[in-house]
View 1 (spheres, helix red, strand yellow):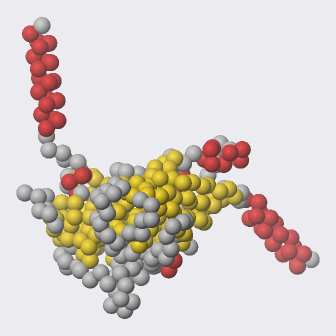
View 2 (cartoon, one colour):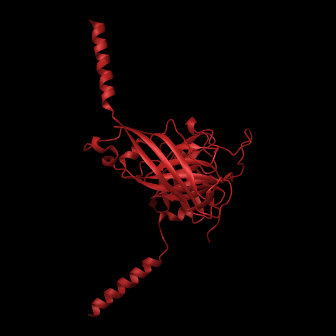
View 3 (cartoon, each protein chain N blue to C red):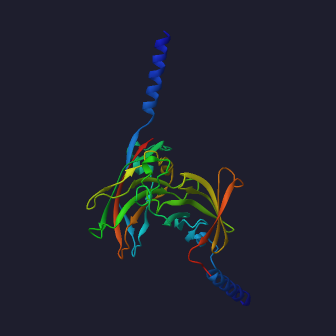
Length: 152
Length: 168
């Protein structure tokens, strides 16, 4: 009887600890982030089980030639070149792998209309290493993004 | 004799190609996208989960093991239902996404800028975006991004109708 009570108490405490433990899930990626060049801000959201990042702010939102809000004029699909750049999902389809890493996604460079494979590594709550690459991850470039509203 | 053989071979190839594909339409009609307020200026997303059931889509043409060889968005339009007279949206972008890690999100249609309100707003389907892989999924996320030009302290309801042409 004493043994049963001990097991029940132990299970209750374990459940309690688990419920209040900080989430180690991928949702820590959610929020607004700024690339190192400071030219844009990207809001990372979740659709289904994957993570996507859309441009929510541009330092220079107006196209100097057309005097209109910038569009995705370098999109390789000409029929989609009128897509507004503000709101464009430049990060797509990331899956949380655990160990502070999101992979399987792509990053889009609106300056040349190219899409690269990408892996995201969170080095701390407010810093991301965003590595874009072609083929193998070793052949790529890493940019450091900072969270706009810093978490303490 | 050689010419006849070439013509016969040509006719055979033509016949084989034309009889391989059957065509059907898949229509998502008046599906609701709710943008929950308060909404801030800029792009806001709403989504609808569409079930893909080939048995239902193909009806009497359905056969066990049938696969969609080609799927393309042919028509897309939306209507702003609430609040009435809302003209605070400058653009819509329609995309598909799925939980399948091997399937990437695709933008399928866009309208920017919106030239007239008060009725159906037509989106221009992409000429190259391929939706075929989505029809192998059990469900897909239909994502409608709306670009708001002002902050709005209200919910916005948009209804969308999208028509796909399927070859199988």
